[in-house]
Image 1 (cartoon, rainbow, N blue to C red):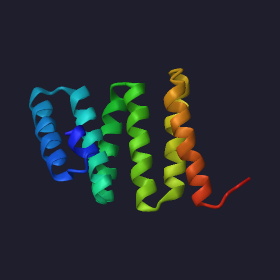
Image 2 (image 1 turned 180 degrees about the vertical axis):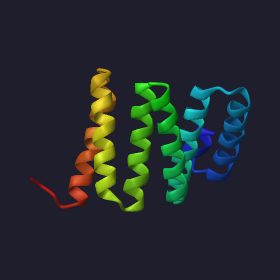
Image 3 (image 1 turned 135 degrees about the vertical axis):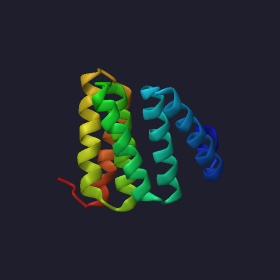
Image 4 (image 1 turned 30 degrees about the horizontal axis):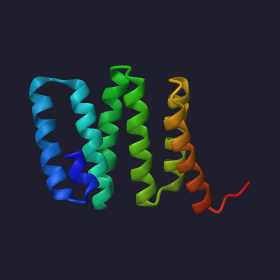
Length: 131
């Protein structure tokens, strides 16, 4: 599903990721559920279905928090921030990117913390906030 998403075939991606989500739910595989919801949320955001994307990401985030899985929390927060950004809610996007960055730094994941910092800079540029 992720490959189809990256190729822009959102319907195929959506179908494949939904099948994996259904399977993870049947198996009660909570890590798989988080990853599938996160991937499905990303697909929905790329399709322009922002409310659906945001709901999926929030659901994945709640499960990652319940499991105390910091890496998945950060990854989901990053996708949630992207959904907020694409929907035009720059303030929520900024706050959510900052939350993701804090966790990436806590995990000493400099690469992803840096990538998120670029996205934060993009938000400030869009807001014309150059201070």
